[in-house]
Length: 465
Image (cartoon, rainbow, N blue to C red):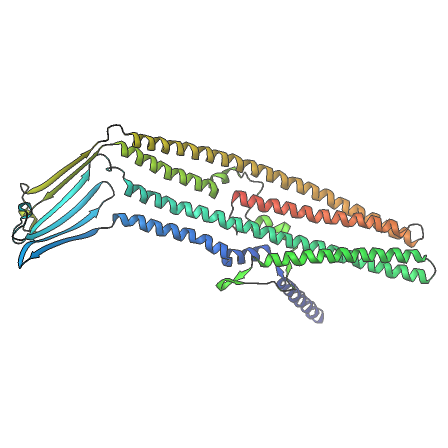
């Protein structure tokens, strides 16, 4: 029972220690969560969608019903020349059809005879139709269609801006991690140099080692301290740079506490955090890439322009027909013999302007097709190149890990020979310098590999988990 109690107590202490340790670690996932939620530029990018919705509302306003009132009165020397009231209610429809309802009530001594109406006024419900130009498409319809497409395009452009910020913030985090690992590497070798100097001094005092060895060990320690100080400056800079991407509510910048550290297991987690699977074919992602989607949507807008230009070549034939009645309460009283109709025909002879605008619209579509094809090829080539980079860095890391193991064995062998009086401190320091260089190369290579993974995220435009 007592043994079980001590085992449980030890387990609780280990869990508490692990929790305390995790509280001081800022993982890449947590960091990107702050960027995604609070970064001002990410918030600014979301305004693009809001702006597009406002423009869509504006385009829909072209189809709003309208009430118009036209009132004119002329009175001179107590004589009413005329008193004219003309009101109308218009309902635009999707195609080139407009429903209308008019009411006229005119009076006056000098009123133009054509404005004479019954005492109760004249009601004229009717319709106006564009029979050729403007029937199937017109500027109002085209503007609304383009506004709807622009809303989708804004979402794609928003994702592009947000993912660019994510990429920049990821690189900053990885640089912070790299700087921390390099700093810790020099910390461990400063400890080695300090212990070695202490051991050499003891051996000198005991008469086993010459005084020159203490000088050699002291020089080596100072070099390590110098390297540590340089790495510490780079680490502090990287930490401050990281703070540029950390914000909280109300656009308040956030600074990292001194005890906050990066996650050393980032390399094993980065694919999961960035939602990347390098083993799968990424070719399908090209069509879903926001940049390609934005260009495709731009092409759709150009197609709408092209249809509008084709429509402009047609002749303008506008027909208007209105029933006339002085009794509006009963539709049965409408008499088809009482009406007001009009026909407006306009046909440009050469159509030079319309034909040139159509040709320009076709050229713009051809141009956007070339741009889309070029971007698809570039994206695919970038994906292939980045995948090759990641595979190469993995091979380099394997080789560097083997080299580190080999250099470590050589350093230990030289230290044993030195203790036995057969080796020299110079050879130990030389071997150790090579070991440090290889470890730094390994850290940089891991950084390059993760950097390439982040670049793959930007190219494929995956979403953050």
